[in-house]
Image 1 (cartoon, rainbow, N blue to C red):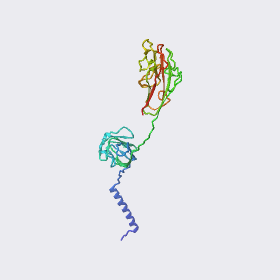
Image 2: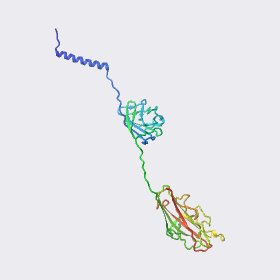
Image 3: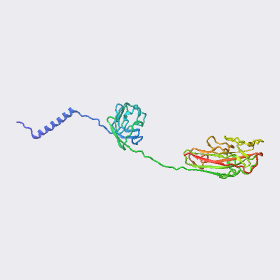
Image 4: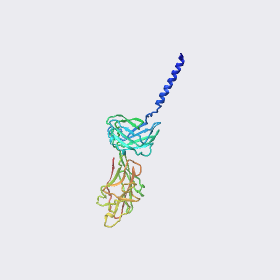
Length: 357
């Protein structure tokens, strides 16, 4: 009888085993399976993180290496429990972009429960997809904590978190400040092309002895320093015309007519029998942006018992900058030979400075 050796039998077994494996592989074949990947750089930026507040959402994610997003793939953003109003969103409430390009016309939009989904977005690996959701329909949870969002593109998924935190109230107090200074100016000071002839002081306009047909003028400087948000106004008013104890007076410019609009200086008319024309006095200011119109060269208005605006500004002022923190006001008087004699013509001027805080 012929008998196989033990070594020959082992070799035969090995060959048989290999054939069996080959047969199984041939029968089953070799299959490749698609593997889900993680979306990268996933974030959600809120427009308001305050509890129970309406907030917009800016969702951003990057398509991972080896993956892509096709127009038939559905993008789903899942809001965690606690966010309300998700189901009220419409396609018009979203702006979707790829790499910051033009808005994508999304399709198959759905907002159900805590999920917002859509398709028709095409993106390749490395491209950034952003979804901007308007801020008028989704309300934040009432509880302060972090919440996890899930973003899915079908085969790829990513997660991110947002923190709901109480708003921080920042408070500060800036105390109000307002300083108003009146100072006299020396003679030869020029205001609106008129040169003062007499030095003034903080509290006096000393015209002195008047000479017929020769104007006399005195200037004062007004300075305002304030942090008033609405700025300030400064007015001046007289308590009466320049009046003497005899009852004679020097009327306001022009010839007692109380001129309200800046008008070029003119000498009194000197009409015998009309005492209003024997002398008059007025004022000019060099505030170049005075409300109602700046004064031109040699232009005056009447001093009046009604408050006369001479200086204003619509914000903070430093007390030195022309038209903002500082202006000059000049007072001028002129008489004719018919003006009644008296040594005590006088009136009182009152400046009123009013800030608006």
